[in-house]
Length: 258
Image (tube, rainbow, N blue to C red; front, side, top):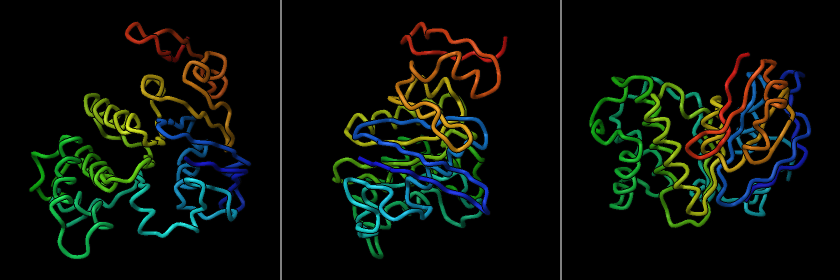
């Protein structure tokens, strides 16, 4: 679905990404992990075409982003960012409806209303749709913006791509798992999700593949069993760890400490 070749990026002469090659497949849930400052969010923004780099460095569905019509592109890919405005004088439903803006000019169609309601149900905010967005807690606001991104990609386009930068911040355990299960169902329909996470155990449980970064470089990119080893994780995070098998599904569990 997406290929990036030799991505490098520096901010104020400080190198952040160093000659990265990455291929992301159809129907894949790829999780990007790594220590603070590894370049995870920058890589995600670069892949999502929010940071301009070398021309033709990234191909999405075999086309460079410059060859996409912007309105068409918004129906094929979407991005959830860490930073969202805390002051939006709208109801929850109206904020989620913003994800449907590529589909109508002035008044939403019935399918836009249906998509909005479905996304709110998936993120467990349907019961607060008429509340003032500014009255919500941090975790509730997080789920509103997740619903907005999901409703943007509720269409008949085949093979959609969503980028999510730390979407589980401020969420309790139940909602963390609900969101990741929603993403898993999304990818099982042939779509692709690229997610930045800090929780290595959630990455091990849900990811089809894991991309581990350190200091702007890819240390490992493989299935969770191959990335989450004691040697690799202890070295990258500079902290001892133990790896054991999850008794439920045999996925690796990372326990930090001696």
